[in-house]
Amino acid sequence: MVMATRSLQLFCLIVCSLAIIKTESATDLDFYEVKKTIVKNAVSKGAVCLDGSPPAYHFEPGFGEGVENWFVQLSGGAWCTSVEACKDRSRDNKVGSTTTMGPYTFQGIYSKNQSANPDFYNWNKVLVRYCDGGAFTGDVEYVDPATNLHFRGARIFEAVMEDVLAKGLKNAKNAILAGSSAGGYPAMLYCDRFRSLLPNTPRVKCFVDAGYFIHAKNQKQARGFEDIYNTLVTLHGSAKTLPKSCTSKMKPLLCFFPESMQQNIKTPLFIAMSAFDIFQINTTVEPHLHDVIENGTCTASQNKAFREFRSEFLSTLPKPNNPKLRGVFIDSVNHHTSLLIRWSPENATMINNLSLPKAFGDWYFDRKYWYVIDEHDLPISKKHEHELRKDGGQTHKEDNH
Picture 1 (tube, rainbow, N blue to C red):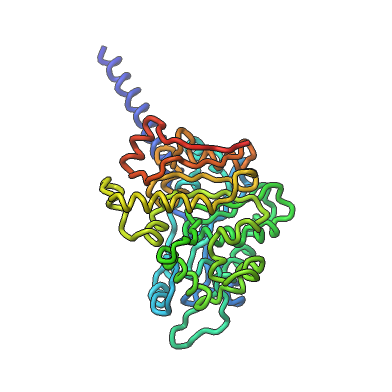
Picture 2: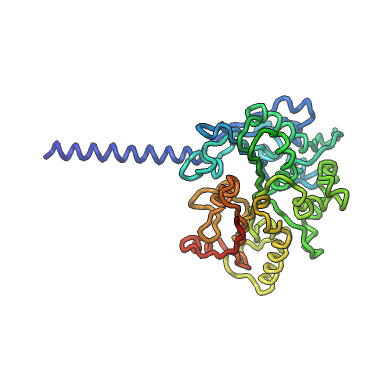
C-alpha cells in the first residue's frame, strides 16, 4: 500500500514536472529576446541613424518548412518634427541610435509556437529598428556640425534590405513587408520596391498595421497630421523619396496620406486598423479621449464627432471590389497596432468570431480574400471588447471571394 502510494506520488510528480516544462517551453516560444544585427557597411553609404550610428535589425532564422519564408517589419514610433525633438530622439537607444541598443522581445506574429501562430511560426523574421525619425523617408546629404543630425531613413531601408537579401531573403518562396504605426506608411511606400527585389519569389505581399492615417476634410482636424508631414518633407528631405505618381499631382506632404497614393501600389496590400485608432483619434478628432471612451462617458458631441470621423475614414479605404489586391480588416476598438500583443489567440483583435491573424493568414495564402469592417459606429472600450469576445458579438459586413 505504501509502495503504491509512493509510486502514485512519483507519477504525479513526473506528470506535473512535464506540464511545467511544457508551459515554460511554450512561453519561450511565444516570448523570446533577439539580439540586434548591426549593418556595418551601411555607414560608408551614408545610411545612418539620427546620431550617425549604423542601422540595425533583429533577425530570427526560420526552421522546418518555413526556412524559405520571410517576414520583414519596419518598426514604428512616431516622428521627430523639429531639430530639438530630433536631437532628443538621437540620444534614445530605441528610436534614434543603435549605439547602446539592446535586444528586442519577439512575440505575437513573431511567436514560434505553432498552435498560437500557425501560419507564420516557422518563418524567418526580421524587425528593422526605426532610428531615423522620418518614417524611413529622409535623404539629406548635409549634416549640420552644430547638431550632428543625420536624416537618412530612405538610405537605411535600402542598406538593410541589401543585408537581409544576402542572408537568404533573395531565395524566398513567400515574403511579407509589414509596418506598424509610423512604420505603416513606408511599408506602403516601399511595397513595390520590395517586390522588385524578389523577382523569383512566387508570393510577395505587404501589410499595414495601424498606419493608415487619413487626411481629414475638416481643416482643424487635418492640421495635426499636416504639420507632422510638412516637417518630414522639409526637415528630413522626404519629397524625393515619395511616389512621383503622387508628387506630380499634389504637394509632397499630401502624399504621406495613404488615400493619396495606395491606389498606385501594384503589389497586394492588406490594411488592418481600428476605425477609432488611439493615435489617429488623438491627432485628428480630439486629444486625450481614451479615458472617456474606456469609462463610457463620451458626450453627445463627441459621439457625433466619432461617427463623422468613422464615415470619413471608411470612405478613404480601397474599394471592396478586389480584395485579392486590397484586403481590409477594420475593427472598432480604441487601440493601436495588432502585430505583437494583439496577435496571440487570447488577445487577438476580433470581428465577430474572425480574428485578424486568421483573416490575414487566409488572405496572404490565397485561402480567402477578406474585406471586413466592423459595424459599430462608436469606439469600443477594452472592457466591452472582452465582453464581446466571450459571445462573438461584434457585427461586421464583409466582401470576400
